[in-house]
Length: 226
Ligand code: DX5
Ligand code: ZN
Image 1: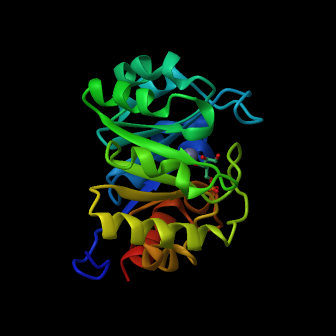
Image 2 (image 1 turned 45 degrees about the vertical axis):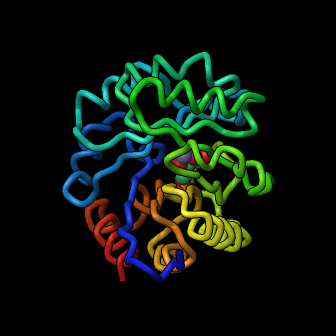
Image 3 (image 1 turned 45 degrees about the horizontal axis):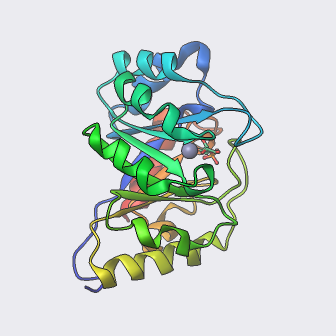
């Protein structure tokens, strides 16, 4: 199948890591009219050099919104917590290939809970590490910064990684989406979609830009689709 064969729809998933945690519900309501997904970054201070939030916050966000919650686990041995994050309300859980020697088992565990499963890849990890699990996942998340912090600069080589993955997925006919996470902004959104991205994850560009949240998310969606 050729990547131009059918038009792909693009999903924008605002990452609340850059939102105002003291007014999280207010910030979520700002993006709600424009998007269908919301990205939640869970960090343990071990897999990445930062700590964000965990199960109780995911639970609280679940109560506050009906958006599809994609939960990005940046924690070691993610198998220990998959069930709890699913119970807390995750609609999709990503596990990093670097975080477990048993990525296939972790994916099976997620799928057995009746939710979507994603595999995530750090910038320094070759694409090949996803190959064996492509038939089992719903989405591959390409990290375009080193995970741990919002507001970092997009690593340009991520574009060719997305391109190569797009070609492979289309060639082999997998039913798998491609997400990109890190340094995504209003300016590079269009280019990322052209390279083959289905899901644009953006934190600081939406919640911490100089322009209001509504305007930032609206422009991001517009540029993604143009
Ligand atoms: C980084 C997180 C990202 C983060 C992106 O480790 O996985 O989801 O929120 O932030 P920006 O869009 O500011 O690069
Ligand atoms: Zn993330």
